[in-house]
Image (cartoon, rainbow, N blue to C red):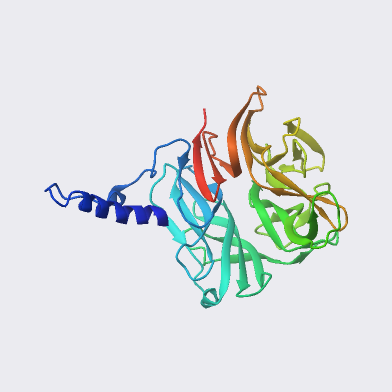
Length: 354
């Protein structure tokens, strides 16, 4: 059960006892003991109440459990764990945290889970020594979602690619058919806010550099998809081997075909900057509008930093678009396209779609 919910569960009986100290009543029962639903039925349904951030939701096959990455509350370190919640809401069914001895003097993170099958997930694992300004190691691999510490690495970052780019991490992990994975390769770039490439105090930003493909069961290195420079997100497309992606300050969702050709899957138009697409059948969801801050690298490349936006639901067959206002990020769409879960203000929220 998320930390704040446990606190409420402990405080509520004490409050009731104090309020009724002068009268006799039936014994109270901690509502958390039998709570198999959300803390509140208000719509959208808030699934998590953790004081730390709850991030990157992903559905397990069957659409009854959602995986996510979260910062462990009440711990001395900022370790990031892998959690699993019922999609209907309620008590967590699994919490898997770093358990190695080095976790005591470093920050270890499980990030960006995506289900490979009922029991195994693909994820990124990173570790940073206390006081260090950069990760000591970052790995992409597989693990049981209930015991993510049983991790099998597949790629060790940084990864030098044939185009000269040095990838330092991976984001937006997406299965695009069989055991083939697409992901957004991340880099750290020195940048200034606004349109100018130079300022007195540039900031180091972690941004997407390009999209890469990887066969999980093979031995080959990741392969870069040409034409995806500085992409802002990635996802599986309509058919095996196709990849959706978005670009900085662009209103379009693109689909890259296995033969290298690219088409515009949907254009949201006007100033509706698109990112975070997810596609199931003819149902496309994406984050549009909202806050997307412009930075500029020292080489003059525009960089986009996302602050969240509106959820757009598109029926590609009819072209009908519906919007859910808010500052949402990283939507996850169930396999039947009937449920959507997204981040907002560090928590996860569920939407039941028509």
